[in-house]
Figure (cartoon, each protein chain N blue to C red):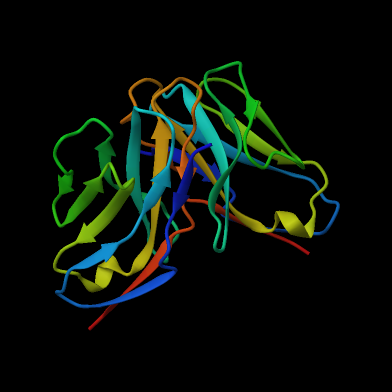
Length: 114
Length: 115
């Protein structure tokens, strides 16, 4: 069972470069999320997609864009990377509905912006 | 707005002993869910346990139990008989029951189990 697959696992960028983080889930979940994890701050929501065809901003959306390509895939794009975007990025998915539906996470992407 | 507080940045526990990781939350919702996740040094996020706001009994999953005190708005994680493999970051999270509400995470507690 693959679950949530995100690529790449590691990436180093120079300031101003762009890149796209890819995420795919095979659990037929409606909702998908992108989080960033910084020391002492837990996970903060960047963008989410409640269902195919919709995307919404989370707590820290500035500097990012997303695309919900289809029900399986949800990508995160950094158009012009900044050192403040150095972080660990997680993609997650969950089934919409009951409050007890937990998040399933990908393995994370460690991004460094120099 | 919902908020999660984890006041213990780091904790130490002796192997085979029990440990409690604190979590308090703030919400005006009546219906919500509380979750705990474990993040070992390998980096993945592992779901541990869930407690619903209307659940009358504390949740348990193997060596994990959740000490839920609704009036105090606390949802502490109790790990019994600690093992070396329990050394990890632990995150408390909550989500309101209403459509469109998202998960809110605490800053985490780093647990170190000593041999």
